[in-house]
Length: 283
Image (tube, rainbow, N blue to C red; front, side):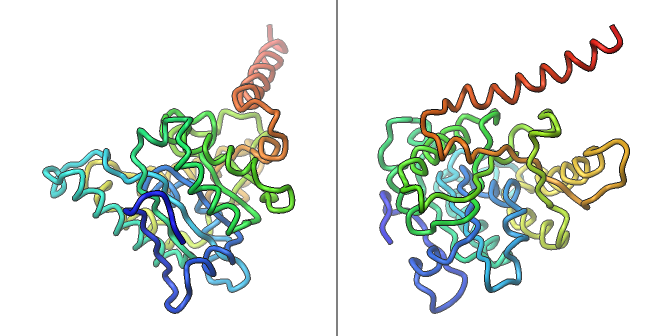
């Protein structure tokens, strides 16, 4: 399996399995911008496949992780050193989560944010066409991190080029750098993130460079999931121990004529209408 950059890392946790086989058996696939994004945004997919032989989760990290904040023992690490640390941490997560394959494409963020960059899209096209996953987890389009939006845009472009028969049945835009709690309930895709709580903590916990480096993603991620579960409905007991919200992006893949911006703002407009109607009752 060849990718654009020599620094791309291919890791198959199961010994004796070649990368092409590991990717081809994937049923749930996450394409994320940075190391640890997968474990935050696509835990639903990891849990769906964990301990099973008929479902397989695979992860793709598009960037090299060079620009991450650092403190403590990592304070004086160079970008090259941090890239190596983060690459190894992502491999550890793949082992813990029993991923079928973990791919790290090592593109700089500047390349990802270049919408004309053919290399990023070509790598993703190779992955999507080989995996032909049933469910694909992407960054959601209301995210406030430009690199996340860049990965989303390249992913959508690559998915749209697939023959209809090879496209995933479900494409989900997931939370990292902006919650989706603001969406009206009818628009929310409810993803159960409460199973195997020890696994969930371990997956985020292996990214010590981020946690010790000053970002408590382990606590924040667990807290957000529990909060979503509790605040999901006001007049019913909690159905799940943890929830992550997602936006349904499947229509964007199946209909390339749809504008990503217009589609996303449709969710905002429905929120506006919901607020307007609720306030009008008491005006």
